[in-house]
Image 1: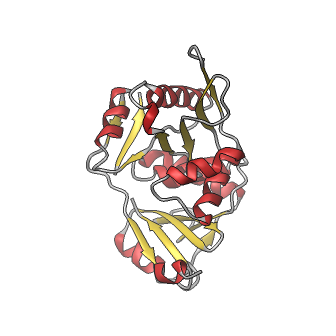
Image 2: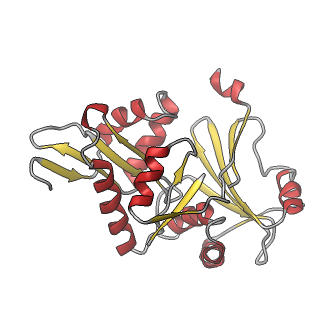
Length: 246
């Protein structure tokens, strides 16, 4: 078995090929889309063969752990690929994402809608379901520093009361409104403004919603996002105990 590390020209070709396989390929596509436009991420994209790949994966390294996102058209090829020495770092904490709802998109008075700043990373991290520690803070800071973001700040204030970020794979995420400011339409306004801005720039617009998150599902479908109910994202954790001891 072997693996091919994609260079500049291969990444351009991969973006074009993956665009034909939405929604299954969209997470890997979003990552490559950003790489091809100069986003400064610590990423590596590899395939099982080239140009007729059946498995393509990106590796996003965040300090003490690795995140892999994979698109494959063959279960057997995927199994062989993951068993290839050097493909997965099995000695570090690892998340494998093998694709959950997914969607595509068909200054009020006293408020400011502005991008988040690095100073807001602590607040965002403290409210994130998967946040709260140093590694998640570094991830949030990276998203804010390198990707589009938008938040609502009350006139005269400095701290956001509602916000929306974009992951390194181009998905919308970390949408949150402080409890005392909910039911005012802030989340809907943020998603609408962000989606319009991204579409105008030629970016893909999509997100993942956990199945039990009815409020987010209703929000996105109310904005004419379309769900793919037969498509799921699956997360696998490896070496979590080792990671937690670091």
